[in-house]
Length: 117
Image (tube, rainbow, N blue to C red; front, side, top):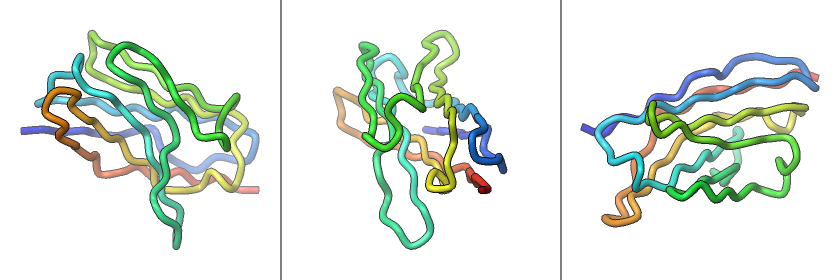
């Protein structure tokens, strides 16, 4: 059974930092591209940051220079370090895994991030 469990969300003041974690089980972590998405109220879900099985990264323009995605192959966990947070970063953040061989997508339940001004 595939499980992606996000944690680390919460309430933070503008300019602060949070680190999100996504612990994966039931997948071959080494063969999955891991992506953080977010969805703000009334908005569509958008890609925030992505890391491939080989470690290449990609970021939304809105978070470049502030957010860093990383993965720990020993722990089957992907992280999103978020610095210099802004109120516009307020959203539910979702972890996604896409198997590069089977193309199967898996989603976590989401974790809330609220940035106060």
